[in-house]
Length: 116
Image (cartoon, rainbow, N blue to C red; front, side):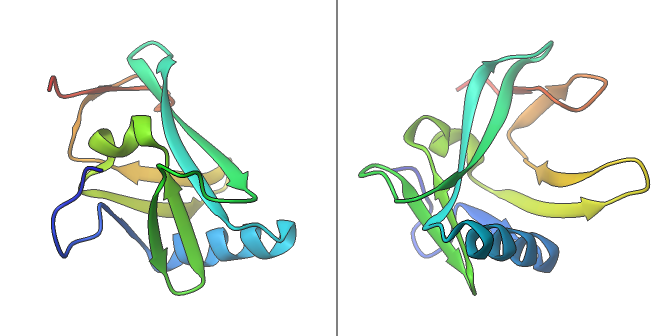
C-alpha cells in the first residue's frame, strides 16, 4: 500500500463526504471506489463506482459516514489528493485536487501524472 504513516492518502471536503454518504446510503453500499485507467487526451482518467464490498487490496479511507476505497492501481497516484464535490449551473460532480497531476486536458476529464 502507498500511504504516509499517520496521514490518510486522500482527504474529503464536507461536500464530498455528504455526497459519498448519500450515494452509499441510496445503494446500501460498502463504499465509493476510486481508480485510474488509461484514456483521454492527457493519458489517464479517474474511475468512480459504488462498491458493495471492499476488495482485498483496496486502501480504505473513512471520514464520518463516507468510506472511500482506493483501488490498488490508483494508490500511488492519489497520495495527497483532496476530493471535493462541486455543484454548478451547468454541471455537478466530484473534483480531484491532486498534487501529482502535471497536465490535464481542456475539458478536465483526463490527466497526466508526474513520472514516477
